[in-house]
Length: 327
Picture (spheres, rainbow, N blue to C red):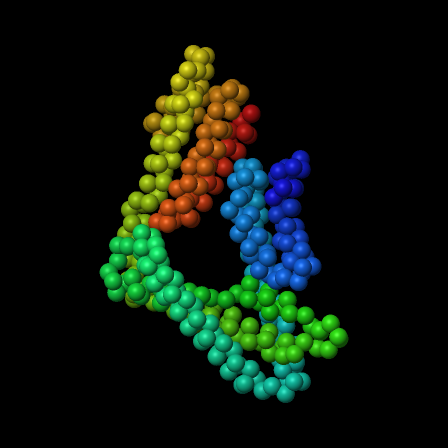
């Protein structure tokens, strides 16, 4: 994060740094004998939550497209790797004298344990929330629906890239040169867990959601757009308040700011202000940054949908890029 702040970077170099940083995190963790996979996951969450602090709008807009394509390619490569590695792992099981039926049984057993453990932990989290923070507990549902929610949450715990990365991180041999015990079995069990969770849970999840009716209330609210309307109205009011505060006391020649107030009040995209006016542009950019911080504060609400917040942040970045392109 400090590299983005201190170095004279532009959008391509920022994107390149975001591609390099996970490898650097993994290497640092391995040097201190920690989990490289967990360090990358934690580091990614840390960087994502603070991307507004060290990335400008250009880097965020372009980086979003790059990462969507990159993640799609990586997911495809991972499952291609599973197909290529499976025959070699099967040969390793045969060399160790482990029947395929036994290995598949272990995989099914581990899958069942993982699903049950996730369901139990979901209920434990629900009970803990009701005891210590009842204000953020799910509302708007019947008691029966509320207690079915952790069950559904536990069923959504599908495994994929992270599980495979953790299994592949197991060394082939130990420090003394001997082969790592049961490495082929561990990898095979991981493949079975990924396959079962993606196929069984993934294919049955839409049916279970429809049959449970747990999200009927949420779907109705989203159909009306009430949550999105709430975010946009709050953002609109915040922007107007910021502009009015800045316009008060301004000299008469800064008419572009007053035109911007009319623009935001009418919600009409008239383009009636001159973005080439440096003073007007500076204030508008400050307003957009203030709106970003307002959205970050709104996202602290447990009832808020983070996808809507991300969508509005992306739209603000696009608006900033539109203004800069007119310079």
